[in-house]
Amino acid sequence: MLLKDFYSVESSKEEGGKWITHIKINKDHQVYDGHFPNRPVTPGVILIQLFKEDAERRLEKSLQLKNANNIKFMAVVDPKIHDELFLEYHFEDINQEIRLKGIAKTNEGISLKINAVYKLI
Image 1 (cartoon, rainbow, N blue to C red):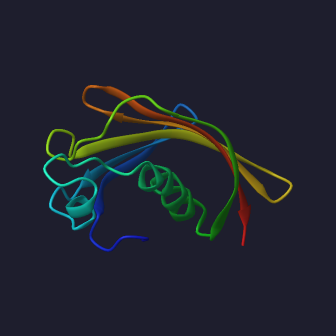
Image 2 (image 1 turned 60 degrees about the vertical axis):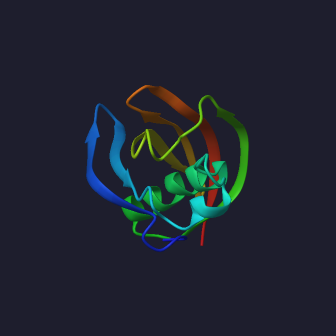
Image 3 (image 1 turned 90 degrees about the vertical axis):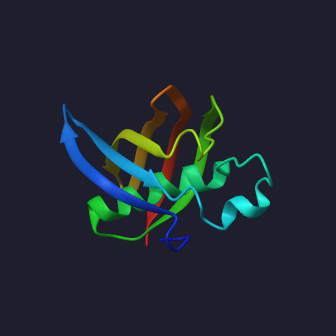
């Protein structure tokens, strides 16, 4: 886990060929002290990291981001309002590369869309 105590996995399941992971964000984590004071926003790089860490758990292997040619931030994740996230994604292993396509959602809708390629390490 990149940031200690930043989140916990509440549930995780495979459904219809995709993985769905329910994550609870620690809205009092120190990352929000600087990002941003009085208006906390979950950093985009952390949202991207959540997909990597969840895929690593599933594969029981370490991954390194090779490229992310399509990332779209659709809405701000304010931990005081959105302390729960749902990652929905599928991935495939093609020649020792993990190709992942997914979305991160709050209770209000999609916050992030991602297409990424990871190298197995």
